Length: 506
Image (tube, rainbow, N blue to C red; front, side):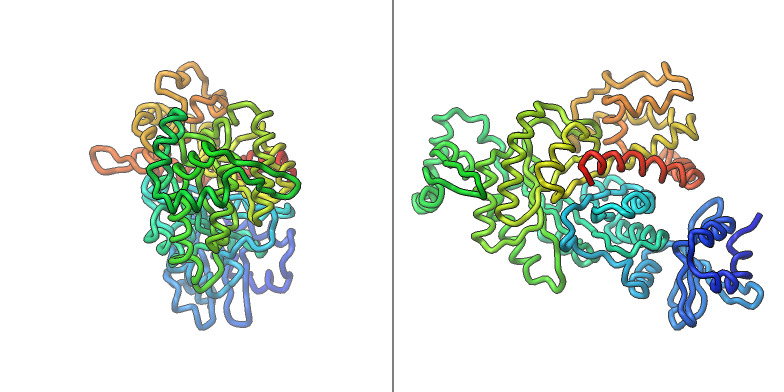
Protein backbone atom coordinates (compact mmCIF):
# COMPACT_ATOMS: atom_id res chain seq x y z
CA UNK A 1 0.00 0.00 0.00
CA UNK A 2 1.35 3.42 -0.95
CA UNK A 3 1.79 6.06 1.72
CA UNK A 4 3.32 9.50 2.30
CA UNK A 5 6.88 8.11 2.37
CA UNK A 6 6.42 6.76 -1.15
CA UNK A 7 5.15 10.18 -2.18
CA UNK A 8 8.26 11.94 -0.79
CA UNK A 9 10.37 9.88 -3.18
CA UNK A 10 8.51 11.25 -6.21
CA UNK A 11 7.43 14.72 -5.08
CA UNK A 12 9.90 16.44 -7.45
CA UNK A 13 7.95 14.92 -10.32
CA UNK A 14 4.71 16.14 -8.78
CA UNK A 15 6.17 19.64 -8.44
CA UNK A 16 6.82 19.78 -12.15
CA UNK A 17 3.21 18.86 -12.90
CA UNK A 18 1.90 21.74 -10.76
CA UNK A 19 -1.46 21.93 -9.03
CA UNK A 20 -4.47 20.49 -10.79
CA UNK A 21 -7.50 18.40 -9.88
CA UNK A 22 -5.92 15.46 -11.68
CA UNK A 23 -2.70 15.87 -9.73
CA UNK A 24 -4.66 16.15 -6.47
CA UNK A 25 -6.42 12.87 -7.18
CA UNK A 26 -3.04 11.30 -7.89
CA UNK A 27 -1.76 12.45 -4.50
CA UNK A 28 -4.77 10.96 -2.72
CA UNK A 29 -3.41 7.52 -3.60
CA UNK A 30 -0.55 8.27 -1.21
CA UNK A 31 -2.80 9.65 1.54
CA UNK A 32 -1.74 13.20 0.63
CA UNK A 33 -4.17 16.12 0.59
CA UNK A 34 -3.20 17.62 -2.75
CA UNK A 35 -4.83 20.96 -1.95
CA UNK A 36 -2.44 21.34 0.99
CA UNK A 37 0.73 20.95 -1.08
CA UNK A 38 2.85 24.13 -0.77
CA UNK A 39 6.40 24.90 -1.73
CA UNK A 40 8.95 27.63 -2.26
CA UNK A 41 12.54 27.38 -3.47
CA UNK A 42 13.67 25.79 -0.20
CA UNK A 43 10.60 24.94 1.89
CA UNK A 44 7.91 22.45 0.99
CA UNK A 45 5.11 20.87 2.96
CA UNK A 46 1.83 19.00 2.73
CA UNK A 47 -0.76 17.32 4.91
CA UNK A 48 -1.35 13.60 4.76
CA UNK A 49 -3.14 10.82 6.62
CA UNK A 50 -2.77 7.18 7.48
CA UNK A 51 -5.19 4.76 9.08
CA UNK A 52 -4.89 6.41 12.49
CA UNK A 53 -4.27 10.14 12.11
CA UNK A 54 -3.51 13.22 10.05
CA UNK A 55 -0.14 14.95 10.09
CA UNK A 56 2.04 17.53 8.38
CA UNK A 57 5.18 16.76 6.37
CA UNK A 58 7.79 19.53 6.07
CA UNK A 59 11.16 19.76 4.39
CA UNK A 60 13.85 22.39 3.93
CA UNK A 61 13.92 26.10 4.64
CA UNK A 62 14.90 28.15 7.63
CA UNK A 63 11.72 27.21 9.50
CA UNK A 64 12.34 23.45 9.33
CA UNK A 65 13.88 23.22 12.80
CA UNK A 66 11.04 25.21 14.37
CA UNK A 67 8.46 22.51 13.71
CA UNK A 68 7.71 19.84 16.29
CA UNK A 69 8.02 16.38 14.78
CA UNK A 70 10.08 13.28 14.01
CA UNK A 71 12.86 13.37 11.39
CA UNK A 72 13.09 10.91 8.53
CA UNK A 73 15.65 10.43 5.77
CA UNK A 74 13.78 9.16 2.73
CA UNK A 75 16.02 8.57 -0.28
CA UNK A 76 18.14 11.55 0.71
CA UNK A 77 15.16 13.79 1.52
CA UNK A 78 15.28 14.98 5.13
CA UNK A 79 11.70 15.53 6.29
CA UNK A 80 9.73 15.88 9.49
CA UNK A 81 6.47 14.19 10.26
CA UNK A 82 4.72 16.78 12.44
CA UNK A 83 1.62 16.49 14.61
CA UNK A 84 -1.26 18.87 13.96
CA UNK A 85 -0.45 20.66 17.19
CA UNK A 86 -1.22 24.19 18.29
CA UNK A 87 2.47 25.05 18.10
CA UNK A 88 2.77 23.85 14.52
CA UNK A 89 -0.45 25.58 13.52
CA UNK A 90 1.02 28.88 14.78
CA UNK A 91 3.99 28.36 12.48
CA UNK A 92 1.72 27.62 9.54
CA UNK A 93 -0.21 30.85 10.25
CA UNK A 94 3.04 32.81 10.10
CA UNK A 95 4.29 31.14 6.92
CA UNK A 96 0.98 31.16 5.04
CA UNK A 97 -1.02 34.34 5.82
CA UNK A 98 -4.17 32.96 4.20
CA UNK A 99 -4.52 30.59 7.18
CA UNK A 100 -4.85 33.55 9.59
CA UNK A 101 -8.48 34.44 10.51
CA UNK A 102 -9.82 37.80 9.36
CA UNK A 103 -12.94 39.92 9.85
CA UNK A 104 -16.07 39.52 7.75
CA UNK A 105 -15.28 42.72 5.87
CA UNK A 106 -17.73 43.72 3.16
CA UNK A 107 -19.16 40.23 2.71
CA UNK A 108 -22.95 40.61 3.10
CA UNK A 109 -23.65 37.03 4.19
CA UNK A 110 -21.71 34.98 6.70
CA UNK A 111 -22.32 31.71 8.49
CA UNK A 112 -20.92 30.58 11.82
CA UNK A 113 -19.97 26.93 11.54
CA UNK A 114 -19.22 25.94 15.11
CA UNK A 115 -17.17 22.75 15.07
CA UNK A 116 -17.24 21.06 18.48
CA UNK A 117 -15.02 18.22 17.27
CA UNK A 118 -12.33 20.02 15.29
CA UNK A 119 -13.14 17.80 12.30
CA UNK A 120 -15.91 19.51 10.35
CA UNK A 121 -14.30 22.65 8.93
CA UNK A 122 -12.72 21.01 5.89
CA UNK A 123 -16.16 19.70 4.93
CA UNK A 124 -17.63 23.15 5.45
CA UNK A 125 -15.01 24.70 3.19
CA UNK A 126 -15.76 22.22 0.42
CA UNK A 127 -19.39 23.26 0.70
CA UNK A 128 -18.94 27.03 0.57
CA UNK A 129 -16.42 27.12 -2.28
CA UNK A 130 -18.14 29.05 -5.05
CA UNK A 131 -20.88 30.39 -2.77
CA UNK A 132 -21.26 34.04 -1.79
CA UNK A 133 -20.92 33.48 1.94
CA UNK A 134 -18.10 34.13 4.40
CA UNK A 135 -17.31 31.20 6.72
CA UNK A 136 -16.70 31.74 10.43
CA UNK A 137 -15.06 28.41 11.13
CA UNK A 138 -13.72 28.77 14.67
CA UNK A 139 -16.87 29.50 16.66
CA UNK A 140 -17.19 28.30 20.24
CA UNK A 141 -18.69 29.53 23.48
CA UNK A 142 -17.06 29.17 26.88
CA UNK A 143 -19.83 26.71 27.71
CA UNK A 144 -18.85 24.53 24.76
CA UNK A 145 -15.16 24.74 25.66
CA UNK A 146 -15.90 23.61 29.20
CA UNK A 147 -18.09 20.73 28.05
CA UNK A 148 -15.60 19.46 25.45
CA UNK A 149 -12.37 20.13 27.37
CA UNK A 150 -10.97 22.33 24.60
CA UNK A 151 -9.36 25.78 24.57
CA UNK A 152 -9.63 28.66 22.12
CA UNK A 153 -6.11 27.79 20.93
CA UNK A 154 -7.38 24.28 20.13
CA UNK A 155 -10.42 25.62 18.29
CA UNK A 156 -8.41 28.05 16.17
CA UNK A 157 -5.73 25.46 15.40
CA UNK A 158 -8.39 23.06 14.08
CA UNK A 159 -9.68 25.77 11.75
CA UNK A 160 -6.14 26.59 10.59
CA UNK A 161 -5.45 22.96 9.70
CA UNK A 162 -8.74 22.72 7.79
CA UNK A 163 -7.96 25.88 5.79
CA UNK A 164 -4.47 24.59 5.05
CA UNK A 165 -5.73 21.12 4.12
CA UNK A 166 -8.23 22.52 1.65
CA UNK A 167 -5.99 25.31 0.34
CA UNK A 168 -8.77 27.80 1.02
CA UNK A 169 -7.52 31.36 0.44
CA UNK A 170 -10.65 33.52 0.51
CA UNK A 171 -10.62 34.22 4.23
CA UNK A 172 -12.41 32.88 7.28
CA UNK A 173 -13.38 34.20 10.70
CA UNK A 174 -12.97 33.11 14.30
CA UNK A 175 -15.76 33.92 16.77
CA UNK A 176 -15.45 34.01 20.54
CA UNK A 177 -19.11 33.15 20.98
CA UNK A 178 -21.37 34.11 23.89
CA UNK A 179 -18.65 35.71 25.99
CA UNK A 180 -19.88 37.28 29.21
CA UNK A 181 -16.94 39.09 30.80
CA UNK A 182 -14.15 41.44 29.81
CA UNK A 183 -11.65 38.77 30.84
CA UNK A 184 -13.20 36.28 28.41
CA UNK A 185 -13.24 38.86 25.62
CA UNK A 186 -9.57 39.74 26.12
CA UNK A 187 -8.62 36.07 26.23
CA UNK A 188 -10.34 35.34 22.90
CA UNK A 189 -8.73 38.37 21.26
CA UNK A 190 -5.30 37.37 22.54
CA UNK A 191 -5.79 33.92 20.99
CA UNK A 192 -6.35 35.56 17.59
CA UNK A 193 -10.13 35.56 17.32
CA UNK A 194 -11.51 38.16 14.94
CA UNK A 195 -15.11 38.26 16.11
CA UNK A 196 -16.50 38.77 19.59
CA UNK A 197 -20.09 37.89 20.42
CA UNK A 198 -20.96 39.58 23.69
CA UNK A 199 -23.66 37.75 25.62
CA UNK A 200 -25.61 40.37 27.60
CA UNK A 201 -28.01 37.88 29.20
CA UNK A 202 -26.76 38.41 32.75
CA UNK A 203 -27.59 42.12 32.43
CA UNK A 204 -31.11 41.58 31.08
CA UNK A 205 -33.96 41.59 33.63
CA UNK A 206 -36.27 38.72 32.66
CA UNK A 207 -38.62 39.40 35.58
CA UNK A 208 -40.08 42.55 34.03
CA UNK A 209 -42.07 40.89 31.27
CA UNK A 210 -44.30 39.08 33.77
CA UNK A 211 -45.33 42.19 35.70
CA UNK A 212 -48.80 43.67 35.53
CA UNK A 213 -49.07 47.18 34.01
CA UNK A 214 -49.33 48.64 37.50
CA UNK A 215 -46.31 46.69 38.79
CA UNK A 216 -44.34 47.71 35.71
CA UNK A 217 -44.93 51.38 36.30
CA UNK A 218 -44.17 51.02 40.02
CA UNK A 219 -40.78 49.60 39.09
CA UNK A 220 -40.16 52.28 36.50
CA UNK A 221 -40.93 55.07 38.97
CA UNK A 222 -38.12 53.83 41.22
CA UNK A 223 -35.62 55.05 38.60
CA UNK A 224 -33.76 58.26 39.37
CA UNK A 225 -35.71 61.24 38.02
CA UNK A 226 -32.82 62.55 35.92
CA UNK A 227 -32.39 59.14 34.30
CA UNK A 228 -36.12 58.86 33.67
CA UNK A 229 -36.11 62.32 32.10
CA UNK A 230 -33.32 61.24 29.74
CA UNK A 231 -35.28 58.26 28.44
CA UNK A 232 -38.57 60.12 28.11
CA UNK A 233 -36.99 63.09 26.35
CA UNK A 234 -35.46 60.81 23.71
CA UNK A 235 -38.20 58.28 23.11
CA UNK A 236 -41.58 58.94 24.74
CA UNK A 237 -44.42 59.66 22.30
CA UNK A 238 -42.00 60.66 19.57
CA UNK A 239 -42.20 59.50 15.98
CA UNK A 240 -39.06 57.44 15.41
CA UNK A 241 -38.19 56.82 11.78
CA UNK A 242 -36.06 54.12 10.19
CA UNK A 243 -36.09 54.03 6.42
CA UNK A 244 -39.67 54.03 5.20
CA UNK A 245 -40.91 52.88 8.59
CA UNK A 246 -41.80 54.74 11.74
CA UNK A 247 -42.98 53.91 15.22
CA UNK A 248 -44.13 55.62 18.39
CA UNK A 249 -43.34 54.42 21.91
CA UNK A 250 -45.79 54.86 24.79
CA UNK A 251 -44.86 55.07 28.44
CA UNK A 252 -45.39 51.39 29.23
CA UNK A 253 -43.35 50.26 26.21
CA UNK A 254 -40.59 52.64 27.19
CA UNK A 255 -40.68 51.57 30.84
CA UNK A 256 -40.45 47.91 29.83
CA UNK A 257 -37.50 48.47 27.47
CA UNK A 258 -35.60 50.57 30.02
CA UNK A 259 -36.11 48.14 32.88
CA UNK A 260 -35.22 45.06 30.82
CA UNK A 261 -32.31 46.34 28.74
CA UNK A 262 -30.69 49.47 30.20
CA UNK A 263 -28.06 47.55 32.17
CA UNK A 264 -27.28 45.43 29.09
CA UNK A 265 -26.76 48.58 27.01
CA UNK A 266 -24.35 49.98 29.61
CA UNK A 267 -22.50 46.64 29.75
CA UNK A 268 -22.09 46.45 25.96
CA UNK A 269 -20.84 50.03 25.78
CA UNK A 270 -18.33 49.41 28.58
CA UNK A 271 -16.90 46.25 26.96
CA UNK A 272 -16.64 47.98 23.60
CA UNK A 273 -14.75 50.96 24.97
CA UNK A 274 -12.42 49.01 27.26
CA UNK A 275 -11.65 45.93 25.15
CA UNK A 276 -12.75 46.35 21.52
CA UNK A 277 -12.53 49.95 20.31
CA UNK A 278 -8.79 50.50 20.68
CA UNK A 279 -7.62 46.96 20.01
CA UNK A 280 -4.62 46.77 17.69
CA UNK A 281 -6.54 45.06 14.87
CA UNK A 282 -10.03 45.05 13.45
CA UNK A 283 -12.69 43.11 15.35
CA UNK A 284 -16.25 42.21 14.36
CA UNK A 285 -18.37 43.04 17.43
CA UNK A 286 -21.72 41.30 17.87
CA UNK A 287 -24.28 42.02 20.58
CA UNK A 288 -26.33 39.04 21.75
CA UNK A 289 -29.62 39.75 23.51
CA UNK A 290 -31.23 36.47 22.48
CA UNK A 291 -30.53 34.41 25.62
CA UNK A 292 -33.71 35.67 27.32
CA UNK A 293 -37.07 34.24 28.30
CA UNK A 294 -39.10 36.71 26.22
CA UNK A 295 -38.78 37.99 22.65
CA UNK A 296 -37.12 41.32 21.90
CA UNK A 297 -39.86 43.73 20.83
CA UNK A 298 -39.27 45.81 17.73
CA UNK A 299 -39.47 49.00 19.80
CA UNK A 300 -36.97 47.73 22.37
CA UNK A 301 -34.65 46.76 19.52
CA UNK A 302 -34.82 50.31 18.16
CA UNK A 303 -34.00 51.80 21.56
CA UNK A 304 -31.05 49.44 22.09
CA UNK A 305 -29.66 50.22 18.63
CA UNK A 306 -30.09 53.97 19.06
CA UNK A 307 -28.42 53.93 22.47
CA UNK A 308 -25.45 51.90 21.26
CA UNK A 309 -24.97 54.19 18.29
CA UNK A 310 -25.31 57.25 20.50
CA UNK A 311 -22.66 55.81 22.81
CA UNK A 312 -20.22 55.39 19.93
CA UNK A 313 -20.47 51.59 19.86
CA UNK A 314 -19.83 50.16 16.38
CA UNK A 315 -21.30 46.72 15.94
CA UNK A 316 -21.24 44.27 13.07
CA UNK A 317 -24.24 42.18 14.14
CA UNK A 318 -27.03 42.08 16.69
CA UNK A 319 -28.91 38.95 17.75
CA UNK A 320 -32.40 39.72 19.08
CA UNK A 321 -34.62 37.09 20.66
CA UNK A 322 -37.29 36.47 18.01
CA UNK A 323 -40.89 35.40 18.52
CA UNK A 324 -41.50 31.67 18.54
CA UNK A 325 -38.97 29.05 19.59
CA UNK A 326 -35.42 28.70 18.23
CA UNK A 327 -34.66 25.48 20.08
CA UNK A 328 -31.55 23.37 19.58
CA UNK A 329 -31.37 20.94 16.70
CA UNK A 330 -34.91 21.26 15.35
CA UNK A 331 -36.99 23.48 13.06
CA UNK A 332 -38.61 26.74 14.12
CA UNK A 333 -41.65 26.42 16.36
CA UNK A 334 -44.16 29.24 16.11
CA UNK A 335 -46.31 31.34 13.82
CA UNK A 336 -44.26 31.90 10.66
CA UNK A 337 -46.56 34.74 9.61
CA UNK A 338 -45.90 36.63 12.84
CA UNK A 339 -42.22 35.84 12.52
CA UNK A 340 -42.11 37.25 8.98
CA UNK A 341 -43.82 40.49 9.99
CA UNK A 342 -41.64 41.10 13.04
CA UNK A 343 -38.43 39.92 11.40
CA UNK A 344 -38.90 42.40 8.59
CA UNK A 345 -38.98 45.26 11.11
CA UNK A 346 -35.99 43.91 13.02
CA UNK A 347 -34.10 43.72 9.72
CA UNK A 348 -35.05 47.27 8.76
CA UNK A 349 -33.84 48.59 12.11
CA UNK A 350 -30.51 46.79 11.64
CA UNK A 351 -30.20 48.17 8.11
CA UNK A 352 -31.00 51.69 9.31
CA UNK A 353 -28.35 51.62 12.03
CA UNK A 354 -25.75 49.95 9.80
CA UNK A 355 -25.34 46.40 11.10
CA UNK A 356 -26.67 42.95 10.28
CA UNK A 357 -29.15 40.70 12.02
CA UNK A 358 -27.54 37.61 13.54
CA UNK A 359 -29.71 34.51 13.90
CA UNK A 360 -28.60 32.31 16.80
CA UNK A 361 -29.52 28.65 17.23
CA UNK A 362 -29.88 28.82 13.47
CA UNK A 363 -29.30 25.14 12.82
CA UNK A 364 -32.17 23.42 11.02
CA UNK A 365 -34.63 26.35 11.06
CA UNK A 366 -35.68 25.39 7.56
CA UNK A 367 -39.23 26.80 7.64
CA UNK A 368 -38.01 30.36 8.26
CA UNK A 369 -34.81 30.42 6.21
CA UNK A 370 -36.60 31.72 3.08
CA UNK A 371 -38.08 34.54 5.19
CA UNK A 372 -34.68 35.39 6.68
CA UNK A 373 -32.99 35.42 3.29
CA UNK A 374 -35.72 37.52 1.71
CA UNK A 375 -36.13 40.13 4.47
CA UNK A 376 -32.38 40.69 4.89
CA UNK A 377 -31.67 40.60 1.15
CA UNK A 378 -28.86 38.18 1.99
CA UNK A 379 -27.12 40.53 4.44
CA UNK A 380 -27.22 38.32 7.52
CA UNK A 381 -25.16 36.21 9.90
CA UNK A 382 -26.43 32.71 10.71
CA UNK A 383 -24.99 30.67 13.57
CA UNK A 384 -24.92 26.89 13.48
CA UNK A 385 -22.99 24.47 15.69
CA UNK A 386 -24.69 21.40 17.11
CA UNK A 387 -26.07 20.29 13.78
CA UNK A 388 -22.51 19.50 12.65
CA UNK A 389 -22.14 17.24 15.69
CA UNK A 390 -25.39 15.50 14.75
CA UNK A 391 -24.10 14.85 11.24
CA UNK A 392 -21.04 13.22 12.83
CA UNK A 393 -23.41 10.98 14.78
CA UNK A 394 -25.16 10.19 11.50
CA UNK A 395 -21.87 8.78 10.23
CA UNK A 396 -21.56 6.66 13.37
CA UNK A 397 -25.15 5.44 13.07
CA UNK A 398 -24.47 4.36 9.49
CA UNK A 399 -20.97 2.92 9.82
CA UNK A 400 -20.67 1.82 13.48
CA UNK A 401 -24.18 1.01 14.72
CA UNK A 402 -22.98 -0.72 17.88
CA UNK A 403 -21.20 2.42 19.02
CA UNK A 404 -24.19 4.57 18.12
CA UNK A 405 -26.51 2.39 20.21
CA UNK A 406 -24.28 2.75 23.25
CA UNK A 407 -23.90 6.50 22.79
CA UNK A 408 -27.64 6.94 22.29
CA UNK A 409 -28.55 5.13 25.50
CA UNK A 410 -25.93 7.09 27.42
CA UNK A 411 -27.23 10.36 26.01
CA UNK A 412 -30.70 9.61 27.35
CA UNK A 413 -29.17 8.81 30.74
CA UNK A 414 -27.33 12.16 30.87
CA UNK A 415 -30.12 14.27 29.36
CA UNK A 416 -31.32 15.75 32.70
CA UNK A 417 -27.77 16.93 33.41
CA UNK A 418 -27.40 18.51 29.97
CA UNK A 419 -30.72 20.37 30.33
CA UNK A 420 -29.11 22.49 33.04
CA UNK A 421 -27.15 24.18 30.23
CA UNK A 422 -29.64 24.19 27.35
CA UNK A 423 -33.31 25.06 26.91
CA UNK A 424 -35.15 22.33 24.99
CA UNK A 425 -38.63 20.82 25.22
CA UNK A 426 -37.52 17.18 25.22
CA UNK A 427 -37.73 15.10 28.42
CA UNK A 428 -36.05 11.75 28.89
CA UNK A 429 -39.29 9.76 28.68
CA UNK A 430 -40.09 11.39 25.32
CA UNK A 431 -37.00 10.08 23.49
CA UNK A 432 -37.54 7.25 21.01
CA UNK A 433 -36.71 3.67 22.09
CA UNK A 434 -33.66 2.63 20.07
CA UNK A 435 -34.48 -1.07 20.48
CA UNK A 436 -37.34 -0.59 18.03
CA UNK A 437 -34.87 0.34 15.27
CA UNK A 438 -32.77 -2.07 13.26
CA UNK A 439 -29.14 -1.19 12.54
CA UNK A 440 -30.07 -0.16 9.02
CA UNK A 441 -32.72 2.23 10.32
CA UNK A 442 -30.66 3.93 13.03
CA UNK A 443 -30.09 7.12 10.96
CA UNK A 444 -33.88 7.66 11.13
CA UNK A 445 -33.45 8.60 14.80
CA UNK A 446 -31.59 11.69 13.66
CA UNK A 447 -34.78 12.88 11.97
CA UNK A 448 -36.85 12.71 15.18
CA UNK A 449 -37.07 15.94 17.17
CA UNK A 450 -36.79 14.29 20.57
CA UNK A 451 -33.78 12.13 19.80
CA UNK A 452 -32.09 14.96 17.90
CA UNK A 453 -32.36 17.24 20.90
CA UNK A 454 -31.20 14.59 23.36
CA UNK A 455 -28.12 13.86 21.27
CA UNK A 456 -27.58 17.54 20.42
CA UNK A 457 -27.05 18.77 23.99
CA UNK A 458 -25.32 15.75 25.58
CA UNK A 459 -22.19 16.04 23.44
CA UNK A 460 -19.98 17.01 26.38
CA UNK A 461 -20.77 13.83 28.29
CA UNK A 462 -20.48 11.61 25.23
CA UNK A 463 -17.07 13.05 24.39
CA UNK A 464 -15.53 13.48 27.82
CA UNK A 465 -17.07 11.06 30.32
CA UNK A 466 -14.77 8.29 31.58
CA UNK A 467 -15.30 4.89 33.14
CA UNK A 468 -14.18 3.84 36.62
CA UNK A 469 -10.72 3.05 35.25
CA UNK A 470 -10.25 6.59 33.94
CA UNK A 471 -10.71 5.63 30.28
CA UNK A 472 -12.96 7.56 27.92
CA UNK A 473 -16.22 5.69 27.41
CA UNK A 474 -16.75 6.61 23.75
CA UNK A 475 -14.21 9.21 22.66
CA UNK A 476 -11.48 7.09 21.04
CA UNK A 477 -13.84 4.82 19.10
CA UNK A 478 -15.96 7.80 18.05
CA UNK A 479 -13.02 9.76 16.63
CA UNK A 480 -11.54 6.65 15.03
CA UNK A 481 -14.83 6.04 13.22
CA UNK A 482 -14.95 9.59 11.91
CA UNK A 483 -11.32 9.39 10.79
CA UNK A 484 -12.04 6.22 8.83
CA UNK A 485 -15.15 7.67 7.23
CA UNK A 486 -13.91 11.24 6.80
CA UNK A 487 -15.26 11.63 3.27
CA UNK A 488 -18.68 10.37 4.35
CA UNK A 489 -18.74 13.04 7.05
CA UNK A 490 -17.82 15.73 4.53
CA UNK A 491 -20.57 14.55 2.20
CA UNK A 492 -23.16 14.65 4.98
CA UNK A 493 -22.10 18.17 5.97
CA UNK A 494 -22.25 19.34 2.38
CA UNK A 495 -25.79 18.08 2.01
CA UNK A 496 -27.09 19.26 5.38
CA UNK A 497 -25.48 22.70 5.68
CA UNK A 498 -25.98 23.12 1.95
CA UNK A 499 -29.71 22.91 2.56
CA UNK A 500 -29.39 25.83 5.00
CA UNK A 501 -27.68 27.99 2.40
CA UNK A 502 -30.01 27.00 -0.40
CA UNK A 503 -33.10 28.00 1.58
CA UNK A 504 -31.45 31.29 2.56
CA UNK A 505 -30.96 31.96 -1.14
CA UNK A 506 -27.16 31.90 -0.91
